[in-house]
Amino acid sequence: MLEAQNISYAHRKFSILENIDVSVNYGELLVIVGPNGAGKSTLLSVLANELARHEEPILFKKKAFKEWGDKDLAHSKAKFSQSNSHDIPLSAKDVVMMGRYPYFASIPQKKDQDATQKAMEETDVAALASRDYNSLSGGEKQRVHLARVLAQLDNEVENKMVFLDEPLNNLDVLHQHRILHTIKKFTQNGNAAIMVLHDLNLAAQFADRVMLLKKGKIVAHDVPAAVFTKEIISRVYNFPCIVCPNPVNKNPLIIFGT
Image (tube, rainbow, N blue to C red; front, side):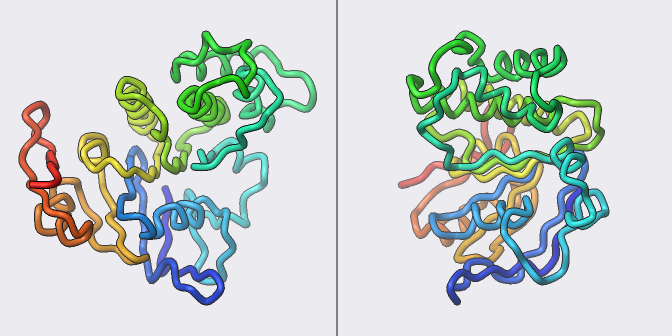
């Protein structure tokens, strides 16, 4: 679904990413992990076509982003950013409805109302619909914006892609798993997702493939069991760990500080 080769990016002559190749298959969840400053969010922004580059084009469904019309692209891809405005003078429902802006000119139609309601139920914020967004907790605001992204991609287009930068920030354990199950279900319908996470165990549990970055370079890019080894994790994070099978699903279980 998405192909990119030789991605390099620098800011004010400071190299952030170096020679990164990425491919994401239909129906796949790729999780990007790595220490602080590894370039995870920058890579996600480059892949989502938010940062200008002059090297080889990124292909989304076999077409460069410049070949897409704005409306068609908005119906096919969406991005959840790590930083969202903390001061939005709207109700929670109106913020979620922002995800439907590519679909109507002035007045939302029934399908827009339905998509908004569905997304709010999936992220467990339906009960907050009439609340002032600015009165919500950090975790509630996070889920409202996740609902906005889901509402944007609620359409009949096949093979959509969502980019998610630290979507689990401020969420409790229940909602972390609820959101990850929602994203996993999204990919299982022929769509794809690229997600930045810090929690390696959640990445191991939900990712189809993992890309581990350090200082702007790929250290490992494979299935979780091949990436999350004691030797690789201890070296990249400079912190001791042990890796054992998760008793629930046999995925790698990483325990730090041993």
